[in-house]
Length: 144
Image (cartoon, rainbow, N blue to C red; front, side, top):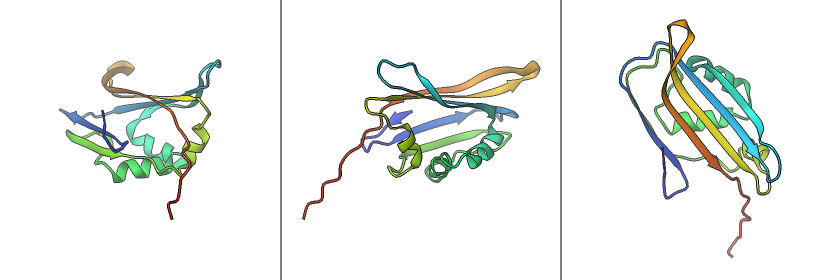
């Protein structure tokens, strides 16, 4: 995963062989100073089910649509062999999810992973990511 000079996030994921049962996990936590972390969202499910979960949570739908527009990522099972690229991924500042996550001096943590489900419910890790950030409010200044 890389960060561009335009405040965007990019990634390149190479899948070397088809994954018949990909499992995806996503954990979003938030912490305000002097308080314990609170879980905002936590899901581990088959990749092909993730899209329907995102569709059922209105706050995530714009993020999902944005990600699919700015990448060749997929939520299909099986996960086909190939190179999946996301470049300069940005979230619209008007996204309601950002308003929900905004806390003065608060930090959010996004953890995720992609696994291959093996026999006997064993998960083999294919990739992981961990992102820490802050949501800040900037006042727009109009120059006349």
